[in-house]
Length: 480
Length: 130
Image (cartoon, rainbow over all chains, first blue to last red; front, side, top):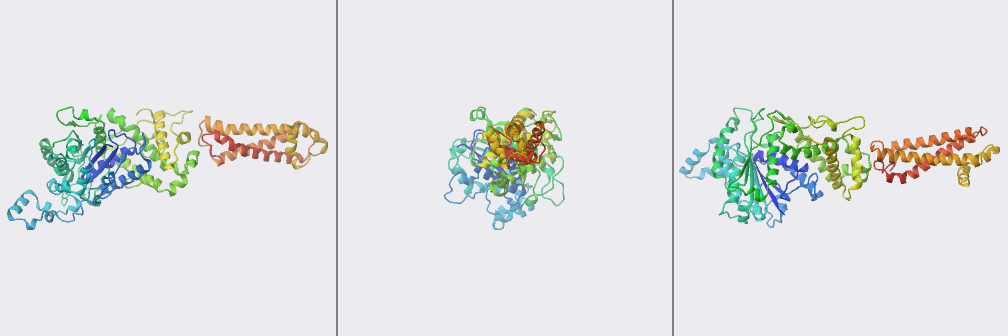
């Protein structure tokens, strides 16, 4: 069973993994693998972006466990924690999506053992790191300082998680890295991890498989700015300088990559300047969704295609036009074909789940014993959380994407009329054709319910919702 | 057939006034019985098959909509007894109204029993009334 090991490094890594989880929930196909194993690497254990991504992944995992493998549908792809892919005989790897830094609750100075260093080494440390670097607590990450990150993250290769990862790495497995290039954790972590995995002298097991594994990465260049405040340690005016410096390093030191995706955007409204912790909770951004799509794109390539050239395949991305509000028609055809129907189906499902499902008094609902299940069965509550949780749910994700600058606004989220939900593409209606009405959806649910043989009411509901929203899109929306 | 309807409608006693008994037994009972069954079947076909299957209306399938049809069926059954009595020029008597009421009750009972069969043929009302 081929797996994709997905390293989400730093805050951007978490946010891209969040977007990928949403895309996979919508039913987007991830070919050439049966399982995705996200490993989020962020020393900032309280980072709000990371924590809500983890909550989302955990909820997805519970839902997938109940659904199991299927040909198509919402939550089609298996997302598992590292420890769940195999029996961990030592019990040293926690059942979590997050790499365990073991609570590095000390300053960088203490981490280096600065006070016990000889004078010459102290002088070297002082030349490489600012006083602020040395005094900064590692509990909130590296605060945009890759020189700090590169020291701390070097320890990763010796961790039980990495050993467990290598022990369970198999021949057809792939690796993908998600990181930003302008911060601290991502910029330092990506090349370090890559170097350690591809190192011919590595002490990790399955070294040959690791070295030969198809490997891709998306490097997100600056796409947001931060409010300038005198007391803040991260200054977004340095993002471009840091990006240039890191690109200069990448040019000669990235060995073993098969595909590298670059993404960037011109920053507009600056985010609150939160170096880490619970305050770092940025709205979802279209760049993160596109970065998640780079993973999907990478997985579409066969081994032959990825290895046909002399070096890695480099990818950049452009919209059809420079617009502040991106709708489906602004996406290139390939992207539109990949996401438009699935995202629309997910939105229809989310809206129907919220507006109508609890009050549906129809044959399909009665046969599924839906009213009881919604109130009492834990898996239905998990689904409710996945779709509507104000912190990490689908509702919030769509909202955040539409509110950010640049906005991804293919949907009119304010309306309850299914015919008007796709911006710029209302569903045609007439005297005899009410489009995607409540009646239309209810009839489709009742009709399909008779055709779906499944004893599990939850799985049946998900199958029905996918089938009905698919039919609605094909019959009524047709193209966007 | 006539004896069947006679048995069905004489549960409330013999027709009144007794001079009209032959008309009731020979004409009115079979007429209202057949009409009752026919109209009940027609309304069931309309509710379960036409509206809730072929027309693909999914929002007219709730128990209250079914009860509306049941009530309509009973009302029609009540009215056709009076119409039949008037049509056959039987002597006016309170019996006519008792018979109309009985016919309405039968209509409701038929509708209910046959609903349990017809609902299986429907898509959007396959669980109506329960």
